[in-house]
Length: 535
Length: 105
Image (cartoon, rainbow over all chains, first blue to last red; front, side):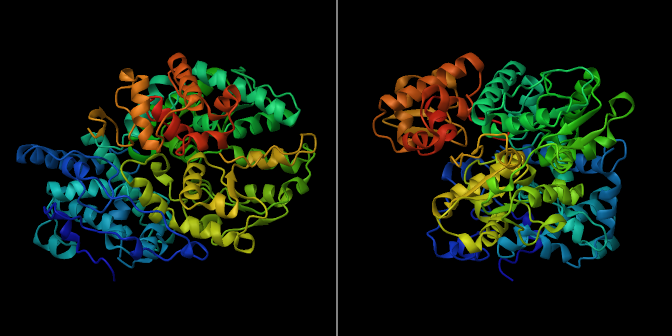
């Protein structure tokens, strides 16, 4: 076993070297022809970051957590952690996930089935600190000692732990080495959920100690609550940009597209991830064209937060999560729409369609459904005149974890693709057994220091391998290939993987959403909606 | 706070190398940051994009959509990558002194 690290090494104060010194040569091998290509160099952390910030875990740094000034400050932080730890196990303070957390604390038998299902553990060359139970075991020991106040017998049964600052600082970083994809939870014979452990720890750090990645909190959910969108767009900019997209889509397709705004009593309130509008405008453009063509009574909202399906709180903070979900539901209630349809965004599906069930009741409990099933119903209804030969290029499908594993939305996207893409091929494995893109839980928008190197080499490694293998019969420059990823976060990560490993230049592997493929196949539309311009 | 040092000057930047205080931007700052993109001298085309991005940002407090940028300036996205190798967001916007874009972009 490479990199074996005993659990209690986490308590070590030695700052001269990190617990795990990950080298590219340690990582799981890449498939050919990538293995023979020159690899981009993994940047080292700068000396100034190592001096100022806690970097004791491994050779990247996601949080830029400043080192405490003295022992008093360290002690205060440890006390806060212990206080937050206790709150995680109180029903008054953890109304969302207490029961599954307790089950996870009490029921792990240490069989390590989870380890074999974790893409990060496997890709890292089985680095011990990334083992799913490594993180959980730390929380479990802390639970039995600091929450249940177990004595010598508990220490013997569960193992001992000393919560000191070096451990807590490393643990904070370790919470951001898991994609929350829950593939481990699915494989656990006991029903333990190691991703939930990561999530609950992130919550403790954010809600009790104010520690969270800048991209998710300060520049994420806080920006969304203030301006209306996580991207910083105001309602006016959103309308302005969508008008631009309407014009652009009309020019490109030859079909006049107009987005309806704030239609009271509409059947469908569509909420996109606002990142789509800025970075992948062809996706909201495609949705507008399809919904109009299918005769759906739909609307977008120009209200703050009603124009952005994003809910980053889902990944790290229940309070931020609730603030955003309540505002989204309130927008739907005021508009008196019959249902909310969530655009191509995986975490927004989990937030609004699943976890918000714990929050929204009465008038706010408006039906919340996936756009993927709506697209499937439209495509299969025959309301659109579709010509699959327009999509006659190799297409593979990336399954966003929240859609497949969490919600069971597996077949609808395939029914669409089998209908409109003649060269569709599956990744192996896929559906509920899929691998995360490596950008899950917010990583796709996090690139501080050398974190991009880490997610392009470690968390994204499995997906990279799957993409290459799906196109193994056509890894050439003869024609473009399409990775269909119906999720903004996954798209961002897959774009970064393609750029980092040069897949567009070497093999013409591009990417995009699902709605774009539908429009590209519409016979009434000018050919070439997917224009293969790199974006 | 990380520092970006060039020609004897020091700029406070964030973890991604974006200017910490957009208000101190000047053409000289853009020229200094050009080194991070491997550009020795900013040409007319670079300035056209930088000025477009700044004007849009001043009015809307956010970076323009890439597609809008292409349409309004007449550059293709591949041209923008030629001019700024890190692309419109991490290259052009950084030289224009904008804060790093937020959200799933």
